[in-house]
Image (cartoon, rainbow, N blue to C red; front, side):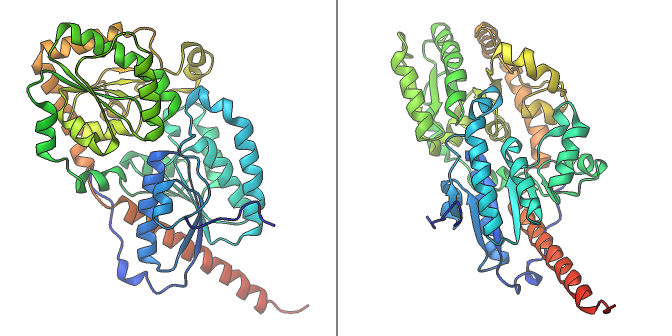
Length: 425
């Protein structure tokens, strides 16, 4: 018996020709996403692929967005994802999960597998998929270009992944130089950002007569909220002393993050007089309404950059974990996404840890005292993001998956024909 019984619950890349890809037998794809953003991106891929291949079925590690798109769910890890040192505490759980998946993949016929982000989990899963001869597409590739021991990491990818769907233009050449087939498809966040513009009346409502407006984005993961939000609140409290009419907006990415935020606010002796806790549906409006944002490092920094809102990027993994491990592995000179894309520091980043909120407060006060500096940051963000803002990433990734499945099917048929035609000794 299977371990699971799934229940239904820049220049843009070339766009595929869809009319030639629909008359194909339905297929079944294993898919794995372990974080909230990956869940959303995987859901978009599922919708696009089922449009290309009606009747296709997806099954795997799925969050609520993937399930809504029609994916059968073996387990939902999206509310339990971890980064940096926090991931080590989950090794036993991951080991048990891999054992269950090994049994499931050995007993369940699939045509291909798709890994979405989260390389610490998905590269071991990709290895399991390859062990049962499944072609593997990796969507949102491991960022080995930012880490040490690239040759070793890329060797693992080359052995476990058939193709990569890259979300940044420079990644295609990078992976191809490492002899890993890769195609730039675009960043999936732009599909949503370009189609869902915030309501101007809601933006005006949030700004009101307040000056300034500061938005706090403490992240979606529980441990990130716990590590980053206290520093954000300390900075906000200091700003309110200097700017009594300032308004502070805190955006909760999901229900678990909201619970952690409310718990943190309840334990603070001093409360901000003009603080509003908002749901994720108001995220875009809260970002646009802000003079600047305090942002936990992650995918949301791309959204903030897209809207041209200056940001101070924060992450607080811990001083000792960084000095014992991180500083030997991280090779990129910048850690936040806007600075990586720009190749220079255009937004302040307090990563991978900060000892005190004082430098963050000083930066915020300096910005508010000099509107020209904020305007310069807005200009720089526009310059780096607008050339990349193209729709169609999920569509391109779905077409790449379809080609991978077709190639694997043709290869199997070719081997089968060769065996039939082989002369008898």
